[in-house]
Amino acid sequence: MAADTHPHENPHVAHETKDVRIRPILLFGAGLLAVAIVVHLLVALLFSFFQTREARSVAPRFPLAMSGRTQVPPAPRLQTNPRQDLRDLRAAEDVELRTYGWIDQANGVVRIPIDEAMKRVVAEGLPARPAAGAPARPAATSSGDANSGREIGELPQ
Image 1: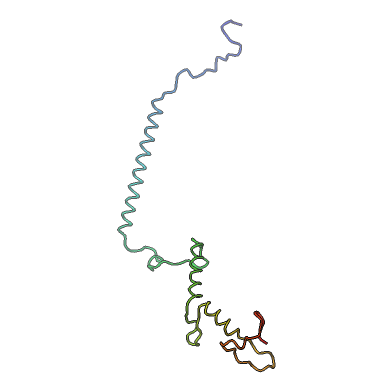
Image 2 (image 1 turned 90 degrees about the horizontal axis):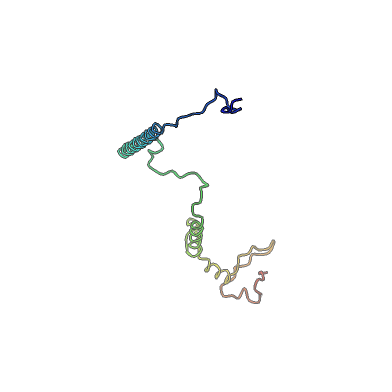
């Protein structure tokens, strides 16, 4: 073997001897950037055109939008603020428990404040049904003599 040849060299296989040209790569990148900027500007112009066209349009284009009212979805609806909903419910209950009002005006049924109702129950007692076969007793008077001699919590006989 010759001293200047390596045993593993192949004369048919060679490597690239010149470098990659950088100028075409930079030109391609600059062109790609220019095209991206133009596309973004065109899309922005298109959106502004559509926005001004919609602003000029007065009549609704959809049949459901023509009614002019907001349609509430059917129940059950989501609670967006459950704490405030509970506060509102409690406030409404407090108003009903602390005020006078009609329940059924045609039949003369009224609502009285809970404090007043408790005072009347203490003073007059609860209405009771007569026992089977026993004559009906008149309601207790507010003077308190019907309740005399009974312990608290004891039912009338």
